[in-house]
Image (cartoon, rainbow, N blue to C red; front, side, top):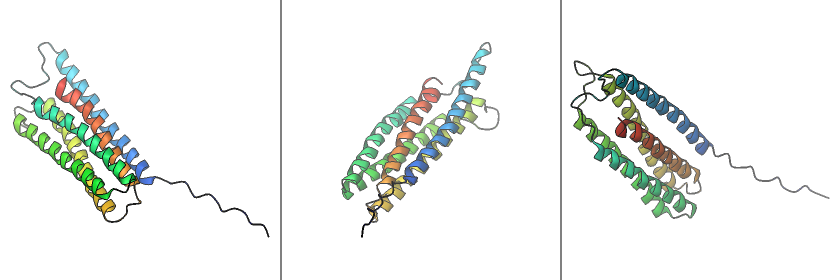
Length: 196
């Protein structure tokens, strides 16, 4: 009696990775639209004779912003280290990489909070301007994305360290999300902090 050979194994579906990529596209579209509005409002404010975009007396601190940008370089390295270690079943290295990504993410949120405290922009009242509203809207949305990333780091660590070491896709999706945040922050840094 002749038998057919067994069917090929089904291809991996990579649902977590694809879902993370779609979430990144959606968040990128949101921040991109907000940055486009920022540039439009800035252009309109500067086109007026004697016009100013940044309110008088407001100093945008660049040292914490530059530190945040450099921190994303470290996050990219540590996120990739996590993927590398997970593929080689090095649980302690994966845990260390995920912990460092989350810790640096918290440090970036802290740097943004310092910028808020230092600038003291009013939202309502006499000193409220379009710059103030747009600054808080764009950077606040980015802080929300950072908090989501920190939560993603915690979930990835618990899931991988909890025994699902064969599920490496979540570690790759985690790295993708942080790469995306790094690229997004570069655009935000250039438009909001540097060109003002």
